Image (tube, rainbow, N blue to C red; front, side, top):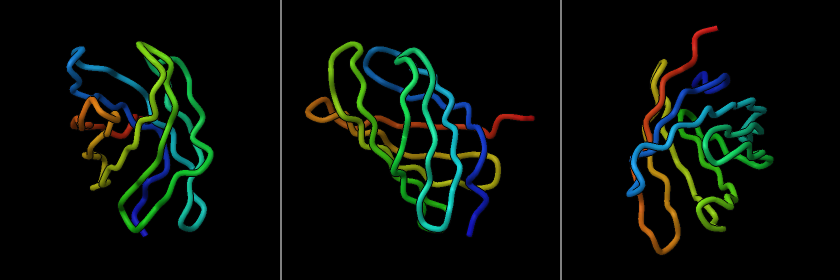
Length: 101
């Protein structure tokens, strides 16, 4: 299993510009719990999934409007890359780097 645990400094390239957040991942087997903190506020991620080096999770946001984001990312060493699906608004790329302790 890949080392997916830790804090990740992430950026989503959205129509409203770059949206930065810190993703925290704590895995146990094929699941992870954690949070996302940034301009959207702080959101818990109670039921994330881990499949090898792939993460998948959903989170509810209320700014700029209420919507559920469906996220997937692949971890490769100290980087991650993936997509964030924002309902009818489409899918946007997300990139991240492991935060240094």
